[in-house]
Length: 330
Image 1: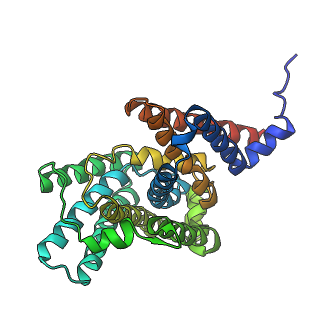
Image 2: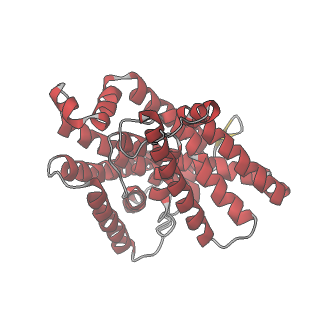
């Protein structure tokens, strides 16, 4: 006699239907583990502030990645675009030979435009040339990072205006780091657009049923191009904030940023198959890789274990997404 697979228990069903609840529980568990292993170091003010700033940097990348993944796409180029945007920004600011107040604004504009340009390239190749997002963004990742190294000779550039470092990098408002405030505002705007506007509705429609969205009148190519421009714009902003935070470029420090951003979005309940995801879930999911990386450093594990841990978390998130999809269809 053939038996049907029993449905998940009510509590498990509740967890599957509320990824934010699962993320919060997992995050608490990870924090408790590191608190037990190294309470003084993990709960120090410096470490908490650094985690908040790191999560904020990752949140900016994850905002753009949320839009991309909701459309069932992927963007592997964000870390390289971040590096390239920071490089051209600092080169432009240094070329002015001035410390006037308009120079930091010029640097920000150049960084944003640079990121948006890479997003536009990705979008055109994906939407109009109908190339696979994975291949396109993998290629532009290599090109952007290679160009950044060519422009710098592989050496990090200094000469970032001190006003940027003082006002943004180490600046605080009401005791809260400015970078954290910028990320919060950015995430709120991204969430409002995704969840409360027609653009966000079309984004979900494309990820859920591309052919249906086209028949409903959604200008598919244009919309996808804009989505990838948003992702590139986020990487450009993150590149500028990196300059403010470290007062130099960090060419070799972002090889895992794309994986961390994808992990955060998927942990937040987004489906790699598209049509499902929320900015609220992403905001919760972004802390898990950050807390993992910080905790592993504190307990003294070699840095490459961070990559292992983040990869395992991403794999677990994808398996959970698959299980959630099967559970909902049963």
